Length: 414
Length: 182
Ligand code: HEM
Ligand code: FES
Image (cartoon, rainbow over all chains, first blue to last red; front, side, top):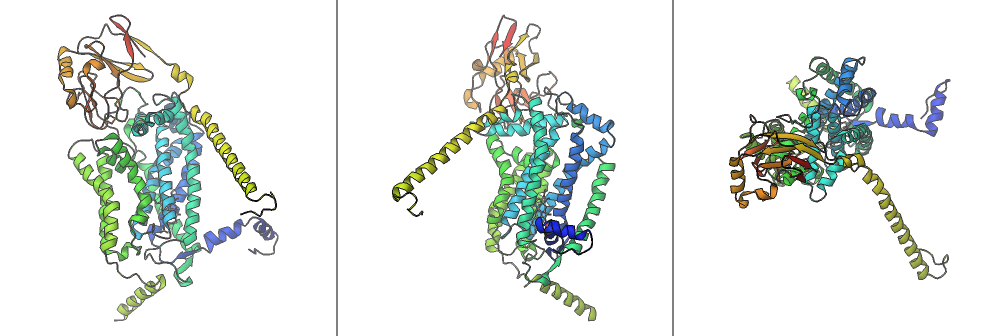
């Protein structure tokens, strides 16, 4: 890289020759060839990355004022809210940020499902994504325990007890997680440390995710590979500006919630300090866990229920091998496209059921929705790819754009 | 794979090198495995947690049909003074009807006193039914609202996702009216 010959720029050249950060940034952020036809569903990855930074920063400043001890935790969070300058802002940005993080990542994942972004050669990219998702769930769960309210405590009890279903070593695992025979100070300290550590792990996973992404570059709404320079545009300024615009829209929504409805996602019970002797009558996990919670509860047997719940996430790892249709984008898959929406609906039903008490008719609906969830991956996807006749995708991205432009002009002229 | 000049004796030298290599890996692997134990053990319950051993309770004031909850090792223990009716219900069930078969006699030392850890064996919530006004589930004992487990008047699981009966802790009657749990 050659910056020039005035006083400052040669220093940059000197650095770049020894540590090519500037060349790297140019290759991956500026000149980086990006499909020219990405739509707004492609904004969510970069949004998630920015929100990860927001979470790490607000989290750090919260941790400065927080005491990870059962006697002080609840009070220290109230101290953040009332006494610390802008503590309320940090806390509400962090707690609502977690919810928004899941909103973004869920959209990001459904985008991948719709456009077949998990297919060759992006299987590992997808799998790393699922690892990120798992790490996020662990982080969010441990973070929710820290305020030491009633929901923190009992949510932690129920979730950690899931591991007691593991045959033979289950109880040992739970004792390890707890550091005792009940959830207590030992549990709180290890969760605090875990919650501080995990985002660093997520950060590293995101780097690997980007590494894999940049190997074969982004997929796109047509699902055909970039074949020539006519198919791509440089990342900067086209997508930097588009991502910034998306960020603006997102921040309006996110900060709107932070300022005007900061407890929208929260549970009132978590403003009651943890009491190990009283379980709240209706325990619900955070909304982003609800579909999996519904799967857990729809199965009567404890071990099978727990296995099904983890399988609900784990099955995403196998998706690239369940759906082997060569055509990526649902745009050209008339049957898959319909089942995609049925699957989205099924996930929403599961989420709704997860929030209800375990009584009829919710139990039965939950069972059907659970069965369908797994059937989508194990039966529907493989079957569609056997029987569906996909439409012919266009030759290339640029030819498709050219064609639609020509049609437009033809119409305009006629 | 190697040229035979270095060790001179060809195959012999290779065997010896393979053996040394294998031995080194093995010792290294065993050493690494052993070194992880102190780390794993450090997350086990520490000595002060283990030391929280027993609790003594005076059960004299508990009237028939009443329950109290005491704390033992940080967990609630239900102590119920059962009515004749409840005992009758608990005893009359056939073991074949139970998901986790256990006779009432196996769960009590004196039939009128039912003592057990009040932690649902499903995922650890505290069942309700201790207070007179609380729902007691379909079998007249306890009900766990978290995911709907029903326990009978002997604290045995009858319906719902919990796999086992409420745990009976080790306890003994010090006198007729005092018990020691743990
Ligand atoms: C912290 C969470 C995550 C971050 C920061 C992140 C970031 C990104 C970014 C910036 C992109 C490129 C832009 C885009 O295509 O939207 C991307 C692409 C991708 N991500 Fe993620 N991601 C995250 C989680 C996930 C998860 C949970 C999955 C799937 C389970 C996933 C699957 C993918 C796939 C398949 C692509 C390639 C998409 C394509 O080019 O069509 N990601 N990710
Ligand atoms: S914890 Fe009691 S039913 Fe699940």
